[in-house]
Length: 209
Image (cartoon, rainbow, N blue to C red; front, top):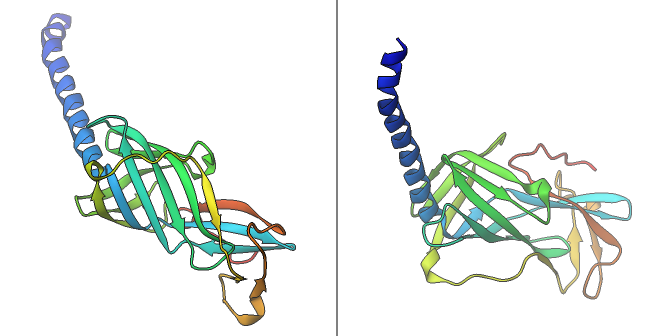
């Protein structure tokens, strides 16, 4: 019995190596498609505290870029810019690391680890990237609008952009006038602060503070 198992060991090793190589080749192919510029709904939001009240602002458009560590690498780094049509900040910017292992896309945000996530159920083509974050409740959807070879890396790490005009705060539950306020300021908002950034696709966000 032991002799039979030993005789089959080379065959089993060859099958195992073949499966590992196939998985690796698939990761390389997916990484080649992922590398580039994407745009769409990534589900981002931030919460802002002002004078004892907390307001939630949902992103209406995300631009996200994936750079490979080297040509055909299955890992790399990137930047993500989330745009907001209301609120004290016009955009939020993030730097992240990404990798694909056995078909699972992982994103690590070194400056805000609460945003770390993985994607296992998705469809990716040269034009679209859609699927679910692990433990997600809804689907994200991105469209590709530039390939990796069409542009050069960006060197910043993390920043945000305040609006240069009066901006309204609102309750995401109603947007009613009684729940809205207008706050004048010059440059950086000083009376409030961001208390949380997150992804509304993976979280059940309460409309009330």
